[in-house]
Image 1 (tube, one colour):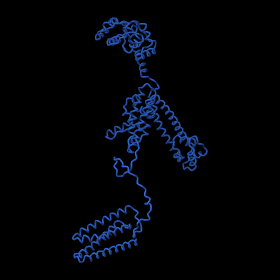
Image 2 (cartoon, rainbow, N blue to C red):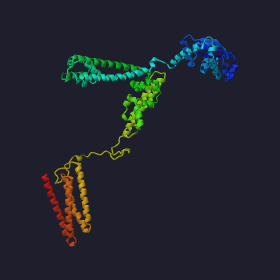
Image 3 (cartoon, rainbow, N blue to C red):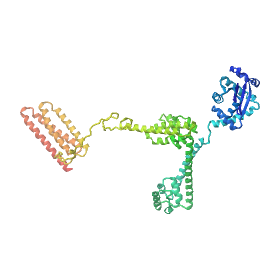
Image 4 (cartoon, rainbow, N blue to C red):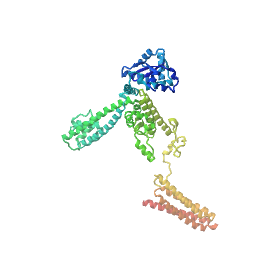
Length: 574
């Protein structure tokens, strides 16, 4: 039986001298307590040395993946013909058995045997000292770690962190410099700041023009649009700015050069950041964009740290201060942080931004983990995730339309308007009202004899209706007072009827206000009450009944005539 052992210097093949002791696994460690006892248990049969560090790394990477290296295959084919081989890795033993047809063993006793060989390795292999094994192991472990992590200069996210930080600093500096140019040159040409809104175009125009009197002789077609150029030249002639010296203009132009150079460098840096993001985090770039993805990575510290965050943390990343303030004051927590600037959230309506932010954060977390831990360099996961978020956004918008129309699944449904209908009750469909052409003509309308004009306002109609109600209340009070006999109950009704007619006629004139009408109606009622009081005393005997009726009618007519004369006098005076 032979035992295969891997070392940083090469492959060692040991001959097991006493195979029976492998049956006692618990006492097997005693056979490797000292080098002398270990030599009685195993002895070195052959050793295959690595030619270089590259050869060692290649063999180690093959063994990590449980694959059979080319050098080990030749070594075992030459030394292990017809022997049973003890292997520490079961998958490697299976590969050896399949390709070389060598019987391989792997069990608990093999693990104890390998532990014993490792403890006495420098004594069992002649010429391999312990001081030599340590640096070999360190170098090979470093090389193997780089390979295992798939280290590549293209996958360094530190460059993204630095680039996005520099991009933000450039934006601040550009804004400061551009505002300084506008303020400085505004003393000479203040109207130019309102004509040209873009900072870079403003700096290029100032650099080309210099003093505003040169505007008429310079062609700005490469910088400005034709309409803006013509407007600027017209305003330059009548500008109210102060004069500046050539030395002052020289300093302004040098500041314009700084603005132009910084803007060009910023555009170059943005292209660099876009290429880095597409190489390092293609899926995250597709979902949220280059700038938002880079800011998320920079805020987390690295792509791996961002991949460890749950979706709920990614959603509010960048809003930590607002989150802890809300938790402290027991208010609502923020719904989004840096992810708010993604294009998908910008497309969503305000009431759906929170829901879309939650969905987008979940897809961003998934895409980040694929970018950080996956082997594929394509952005298929990101494309699918973005399509799902867009579908969710369309679903929310369609559901909102369905709620507005009162139908499910976004299907429109026509409902008739009913002002008395409650919010949750369905509308009642009714037939449309037919058009009445006869209502267009006003020739046959009745005209009151005493009224010269029509009512123009709804408020006057309401006031007049209230007057009628008040008159009826007064009438009912007079009825209660005159309930002593049957004749007195009948006569006031007859007497008050003309009074009510008169009040309606007075009401139709519509020129007096509510208070005056009420006052006049009260006066009429008082007069009628006096007439009724005088007549009821005369109606005690049945013989004088007819005379009393005539007297009441005459009194009412006199009251009506007096009222008409008073009304005419007031109208004439007005």
